[in-house]
Length: 335
Image (cartoon, rainbow, N blue to C red; front, side, top):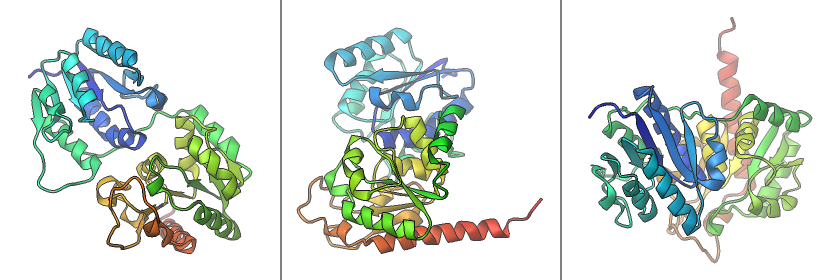
């Protein structure tokens, strides 16, 4: 197959999964430097990719039937030579098929019969692995290799300056992200509130971020700065990048912090950090060993696995990471 002139990534959601796909975009650009690369992405997440240096167009996908049909027609019109479906569900499979491309790549183990839409299928691995590694399987499958793994965000100098302006009076600050899409993944809000008090006693201010669900929780934390539902996605990236440490549930902000290399602590409950946790950041994971840990249940009547992770344990984990970073900086040679 000759090098493709037009490439389409189909990965609509969610925020963490979009972050996980960024290394594939970088590898595509390096392998095919002159290709036009577009990305079908959920409309609320599209601003995260606007202006990305490796991307031509984010194509917003609205949830309505009309929005779906509109995108299907548009990607058919554009005439892609290579289509990558990294979502692996019925809707994404239908979109891949709708392109009419002669080369449609997806996972052989895709759910909801999505694999029927593919002309080329990435073989399944024997053992489950982190989502980033699965996506790199596809990059390798099409000849882009597996690395280097780079998370390139599209935030601008203006976003960075905005974040600095918002936080300049705080001194050192921690970002707390108390929201998440599953109630069962939510570390108790009273724990977040106690953690905030511990951090302030240690000279670290508290900033709360997140979407509308975090906005409802933020008053209970009493942050020094409440940015819940008050940032764009690019501004969120910059705020997280400036933080001393991030404490988050298993959520999009967690994956952004992991990608940026920001010190991070994540209390884990029903989900498996090996598969969907902060990529290559095992030091960031706290999980209480219970028989039901990792149950993958969206609802829980007791949340014992998360309640057992005390605020002091989280604060101490954060302190260890900050101390380690300080030690590394102290031993770096001066120029």
